[in-house]
Image (tube, rainbow, N blue to C red; front, side, top):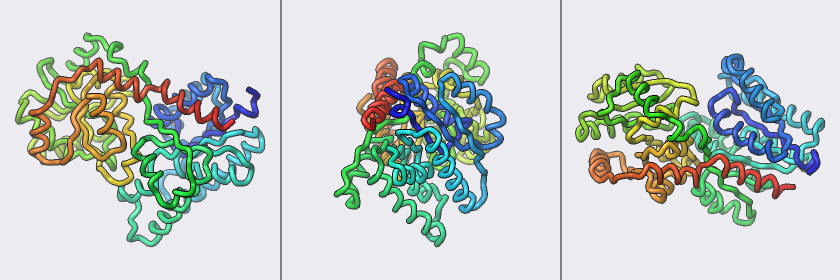
Length: 409
């Protein structure tokens, strides 16, 4: 394959110095670069993280032979600040396109797709819309855009119009979930515009999240450092809490669990403020000593998951979550740990049930929690890990992206 056919411009409004970029962008690009694609990566970096991690990410990109073009992300500011950053991305995209003659522009989410669609319309570049979720609806569902505000209502309508254009004019769309794909294909506005969609969930590095790689000695040392005895039952949570995760309901579940298992402890592996979590737990009648919070680097997360008996995440089941694939699900399953999660989030419950990898909560009530706790079965950790390999392996994700790239030659 000649350079012209294998040259790709990847646009991301997310930073590579952010954890998301390191787990959900760079591993895929490494796999695609190894298949002979020349990839130029434009990303928007927050200055504090960029100064701290720039050299590390630059070395990663150099080793992968990915050409990185980091840009300044302006934190805060108004919608007009975002508009200026969008225009800057478009200018950079056209400048690089003129210089390198990319055959494909691969756009991560909606902001980047604004630039990708312009390249497609003006220069005929093949355009991949890697949607990542129903972004405009996420802003509304998450309370970031209030439709009672005329400005936000105008912005929402603008992006919903652009969304249809992205679907209609992209050469391929990437959806994180089959549920999201089915939703898109049900829209009347697209019934006369058949679109090509490839489903690729948030994948996981199975070499890192490997239960065999964590020794019993390492587990014991970790338990000791956290004040957990081997006889304690550990309910675990991984990741940020932020907008979507239902902390009060998860604590409520733990309180119900504690009535059945007095030796239960709730371990949060998160960068969130520990005092905030523990203060809410105490207000809900829980003991501070039962709520443990630790923050670790990404490569240390597998060891933490390895000491969980079960892992929990409850996510607000809004409309936009049809298209969501929680990264933590693949990581937890890869470690062979059973899940407790709620219904209404992308393909999550379907995967849990089909792979016999945990319990799906249908409603957030004490009776539902009691039924789930009392009715829990014995789960096979080896089978759960095998299910993660089938659905969430990074190798499979790269293969699916490769299929899309090859189709566009």
